[in-house]
Image (cartoon, rainbow, N blue to C red; front, side, top):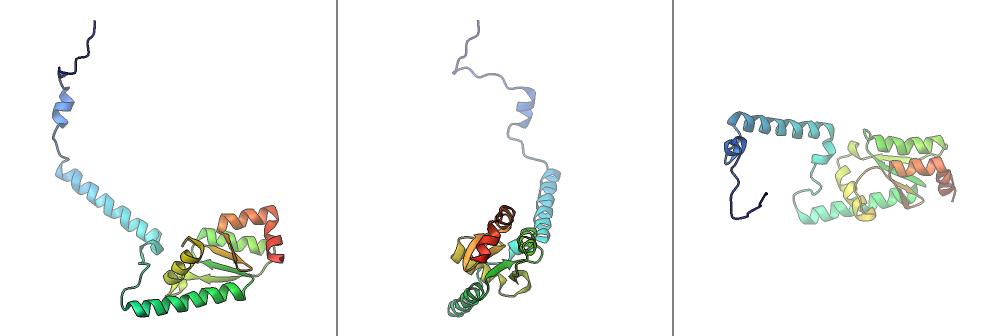
Length: 166
């Protein structure tokens, strides 16, 4: 008959005794640290846009003025072009969105944010305007229709042509 008594301690196994209160060796700590650094640097090289600050330091008045001019730039691009794509040249989803318009023979205006000094500020404005900073941000007749996969789905269903013709 087996009794489970809470007031009685069960003897620990040898492994549990050996590991109780132990710390990883210095070599393991160094290895973990080096692997962590390697991961950060790899990620930084692979995705450089993730590590740029979204807020510029300096005079807050200048920052507000700069944001106002960036806001005007974004607004004018959206108004002046029936199809406007805020993009980055290395982004596969941006390429997907552009190809969708090319397949239906529609001209578009693409602003490559990674080629501009104010690209992060433009993304901040797009974030305030649309609720997200990611690219691509695709506008058709002043209305945001989504990103690369959204545009591709619309193109495949035939709805993209309809949206552009309105």
